[in-house]
Length: 174
Image (cartoon, rainbow, N blue to C red; front, side, top):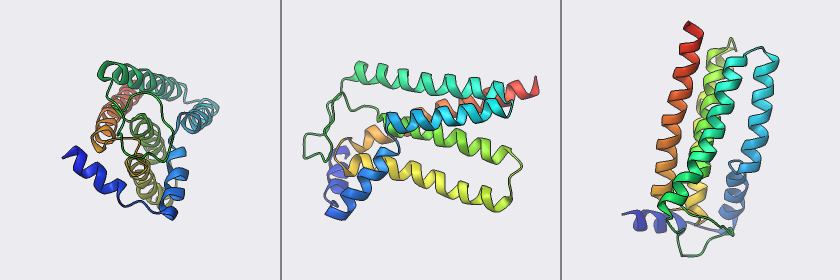
């Protein structure tokens, strides 16, 4: 099933789709997520949301370390059919999928918890989940991950995100 679904997505490739997918996948790479994380952490600190900044920073660091631990533990090779990106390291779980659900999910939580206008919240409620899905899809489309790697990244990242949100809510009640 994993092979069939992954190859089905890879077979959709065309020249225009590859360019778009490369752009989208770079939105979820380590450099992009690190830069965005520093910006969000500084924004939280400047708004005196120190507990949120600490929980966010700890969650992002934990996500990166846990991803590497899992990749080394499972040592799953990447798909061996044509990849549009040179990749090193192991495949399971997708770090892009895991990191983006933690980062963009926490960003969405922050936006929804603040007093922004409803239309702004609505835009982000649609845009950020679509971005998370697009980044995950791009990893399979470009041939760098099995679809199960992406699903596992979303699942593990989702669990980390839930823990981070629960910690924020717990500390706000204490």
